[in-house]
Amino acid sequence: MLNTGRKHLVHVVKYRWWWMALTTILLVPGIIAMIYSSVTYQNHAPMKVGIDYTGGTILQYGIENKVTNTDLAQTRANLEEKGIENPYLQILNVNNDQQKNTKSEIQSIISVRTKFIDKDSNDEETITSIMSEQYNNPELMSVSSVGPTMGKELFKNSLIALTLAFLGIVAYLSFRFRFDYALAAILGVLHDVIFVCGVFSILGLVYNVQIDGLFITAILTVIGFSVHDTIVVFDRIRENLRYYSKKMSFGDIVDASVNQTLTRSINTSLTTLITLLALYLWGGVTTRDFVLAMIIGIIIGTYSSIFFCSMLVDFWNDKKNTPKQIAA
Image (tube, rainbow, N blue to C red; front, side):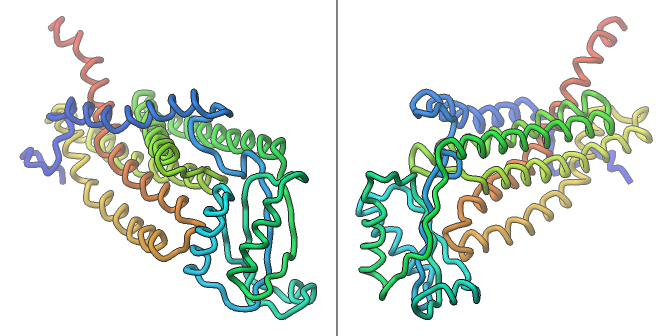
């Protein structure tokens, strides 16, 4: 039953200008960072892109003993100390076929991804030398490279995937809701994507954090989560309008609907964040940026569903009804 006493935990309508100001504060630094990055980076990308999109080389080394995350962190530090830029290290599982093709019994495989190594560079020798210093008889099992042209193709495909996902969401929301609801949800998705990209643009400038294919996966997941949360709120607003439109103002219905779904939204986000936080702390370095993008996206997606999208719907409803009130 709808609470008509107006004793709400959250007031979206009453403080909507404060929420609008907070939204501006959240988005502006990231937008500035993306503009700055687009101007200063050679590829004019709004974020610092990794070798997945710029091209790079992958070297795989067979190690005779088990390699831990601590060992991997030390290897990464040694590589960076010797001038290997932004090495991306990963421990791979060993299968029977790989065992047959090696000279010795290997227990672990370390995959080293770095910038594209051409024929005139001695980076491969440097990496092999560093691996030999830390591990006993490391065996270089394979070397594969992705050229800059292939990297650009992957980047284009990622943008196509994002565009198709966004267009699909636009079509669904336009069919499911009224135009103003659909537009608010779409702007909420853009709000979340811009915020996450802005944060990673800042991290790229400050901490040299790069985006890769996993970042695109995180963005697509965040879009889906954000839309789902927004639809739950909008469904409740639409349902309450059917029964209480003559008893309560639209703003009161929005406030009541948001508070009815508030606990569900927070609980869903918290349980997801607990899992993501565990992955971030103990899941290893290779997926840390991906998990970080998910954490940021879940938090901002919950905020936008409760405050940003609902505020827009109420704001537009006021604008639509203002002439009628004046005429009366």
